[in-house]
Amino acid sequence: MAAAHVCPRQAVKVLVTGASGFIGRPLTAALAEAGYQVRAAVRDPRTQGLPPGVEVARQPDLGSPVSWPPLAAGMDAVVHLAGIAHVGSEIPEASYERANHLATAELACAAAAARVRRFVFISSIRAQTGPAANAPLSETDEPRPTDAYGRSKLAAEAAVRAAGAPYTILRPTLVYGRGVKGNVASLLRLAALPLPLPFGALSNRRSLLALDNLIAAVRFALEDARAANETFIVADPKAISVAEFVSILRAAMGRKPWLVPVPTGLLSAMLKVVRRRAMIERLTGALIAEPRKLMNAGWQPVIDIETAITRMVQAASPRKSGTASRSTP
Image (cartoon, rainbow, N blue to C red):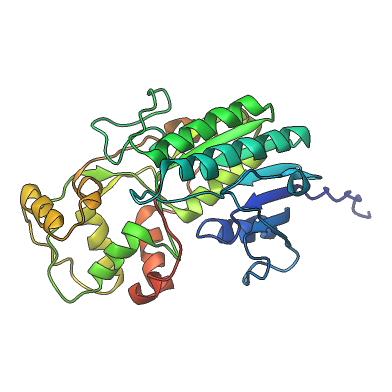
């Protein structure tokens, strides 16, 4: 008996903004491999390394009012990553407001006008909290961002909800993976040094997020009806201390942990001396974010934290990791 003919499913057309970044590039590749028809918005259309078949489009400058309709036209979905992706006191609050809040609001309105079926906004856990939190975080907590970056992300979330398109808002914790920069890259470089490190007393636990798990969450948001019009924290299920993180890094390098238990107060004083005050709360404070709501909706992590950290180390040497994109949540 001949097999029944199955009509091919029409590819879902999705716009990915910030498609050349640390998250955007592997996300674009994963969506293309999964059969999505991807329009990748990048600042430089000559960007290399995007998969064959991906439509590359110029992303407007987010520093001034943006006309998004040409990019949103004909799309079934939008994944919005573009914006200022790091915390820095040298960046004026108005710049965060323009690039992160207002540009997102303009895109969400364009998506609603184009009748997209899902608008996935990659926000940040910093829309909900500062760099440390005294208790585990959940989506029911009142958001209390402590800096311009977090405030701009929270304002953008409100704009997405008000725009009228079906949406999913994701609040990832600190993302790590191949090509990472920022604080994780700094720890990679430190772990590679043939020296003891003063992190042995750091037992405070922090929630991190493997890049592969974030990509799985984006696909869940695009594909599952249970994600519609919801806001989710995204984190690896297991929180980890800085001491544990560095130990796994060094194990992946074939080395022993070699961590010295320096008291937290002394470590904080050392960081102040070398003008790294911003790192104090990130190293010594706790931040546990619960992904329970997302997991109860149906999302499942695709990689555990130990395997993800090991693969990150194997993917590139610490020397190379300093040239990649930022990872601030």
